[in-house]
Image (cartoon, rainbow, N blue to C red; front, side, top):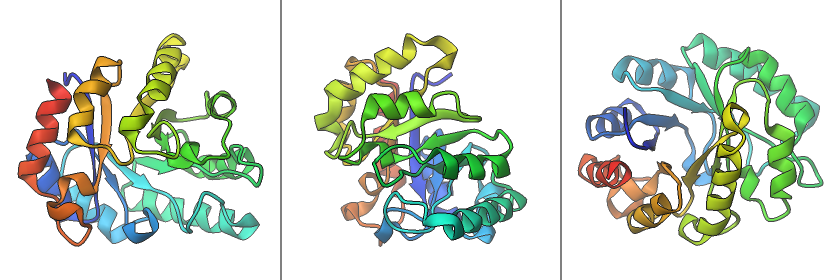
Length: 234
């Protein structure tokens, strides 16, 4: 049983193989990282599922920002969720805000019906500067399938959000099975990991940090992933 979780962003099967070969425990599968990540194509889900045997959380997002795009946007997301499930997706990443910066529970609920209880992560919408974080956690806690919140602790790099993240992790742990797991990501650096682990954080999410030059133009580098794996499990 790993001491912590290392989740690596992958954009294709080659990324997936490289990450898993070097110790990634889970993948987040996306496309269009110039827009902070959109849904992958169903064919990509199929190829990644065939390439690796670790859990793969598939991004469910079709537009920039944290808004769902109205009624039409919800309909497109529900349709997309169905196609991704048909392609083999069994875990997801999603989450939207309304105009006031609160969780858009109507949109989320409509999409969750299409997921039928499958596990998912509420993504970094929680870090938007307009979000009331305690209120958002209270609103989403207990949604079907939700087990994780991806966050850097606010609209700042994860290493600077340690106080917020540590307090939230302790609060959620105190709720027992009802609590949500904090997945730390967003501007995360390798030397942040020991500091965050000492504060009680165990799960980490990386993207450009495991690519040469920190560029999405380059594939995942297994050698860099190995360093992250060692830090997460140390």
